Image 1 (spheres, rainbow, N blue to C red):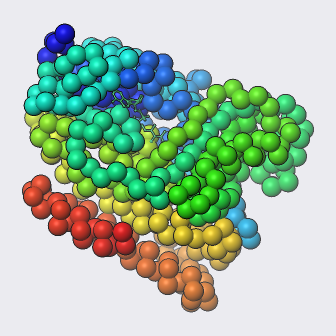
Image 2 (image 1 turned 90 degrees about the vertical axis):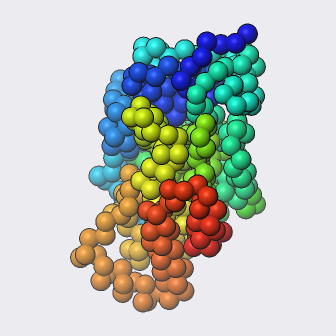
Image 3 (image 1 turned 120 degrees about the horizontal axis):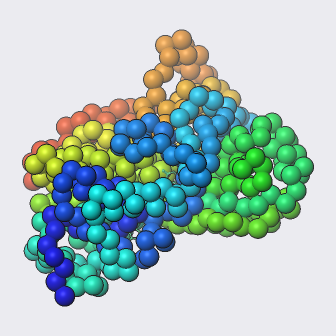
Length: 425
Ligand SMILES: Cc1cc2nc3c(=O)[nH]c(=O)nc-3n(C[C@H](O)[C@H](O)[C@H](O)COP(=O)(O)OP(=O)(O)OC[C@H]3O[C@@H](n4cnc5c(N)ncnc54)[C@H](O)[C@@H]3O)c2cc1C
């Protein structure tokens, strides 16, 4: 049966899709969202760290109540031989089940129709083919997550650009033993104990007490294509080794695309949004903020009479350089072992101001007073200096390229080749 025509069909009711649907409908457009799962099972179902500033910039109220698991709390980043404490960052922990439900409810209140249990199958001119019948629409927003719905010809994300992550909230069955665990690492109650390099470069185990110590949140991630155990295995091994950790309350696992955003995010009819467009902050695989910001930009461009290509050009020029620069950093991190990371921290080359910017998903502003110390450390460690200097130079060069993302689609392939060359792909 043919669904009544709409301005936009959004594929996926996770954070990016639900936010876009809400923003578009609030700007007066007729929107339908199809979600292949139930609405209650859509999107992320675990706890994610998201900077508060992103909510404000996207026009989404900062989480409160049960949705907000607290923060910003001190963040202790630890590697063998080095550690850094970051106090004044902006990241809070969010129960994603509640945030996704809130965005869906906001979209419904703005008049969006949701079609749960309906999957996108393909497009045929202005018809979106779905498992529930065709939908006539002017535009399609593919917010269906990693891999996308296959409506735009974008490359597959290579395995060495995929982080296998897991996050669980578990009961604490022995509060004294839990306290002793954090005390042993000199980490206070409710603060984040973040060990990096636990399974090769770009791997992490982030442990924090929630609910006044009644539960513990564990986030793990790694790149299995480099021969390391996936995040879920790291998490399960940690739980097995810590008898104070009890029953799983909720959580999940999945793959996160870490590569820079796809070079093409739209054609005249289809736009990619969120993980489908690899709009994920590469330094730590965070896609919630980027997806909501992209949803805001897309809705504003379309509602103001622009095209999906205007969205593509606008996003790449405004946000692409940040993502691509941190993709360069992520590639370097991926090839750097835990001991080297610890040494870099101990030398002060990676310090609280650099890490704070990374957590907040922004470019670092290095205070001039810390430059001489960093320069001395680099001179004293020539083997590290070469890799770090190359990474910084590549990051700056790729940022400049994104500021000139081509307005003409025909020029994107040549631009892409230059970006590939600069990032060393
Ligand atoms: C364990 C883990 C921890 C993470 N931690 C963080 C973190 O701390 N901070 C952070 O910012 N990010 C984090 N991320 C990443 C973040 O969860 C994702 O970037 C984010 O969920 C992507 O949102 P999305 O809306 O683009 O896609 P998704 O959340 O994947 O939603 C896509 C939706 O589309 C639906 N769908 C798929 N195909 C179709 C189809 N053909 N038709 C209809 N519907 C379809 C899916 O069922 C799904 O509901 C983490 C990821 C994982 C796995």
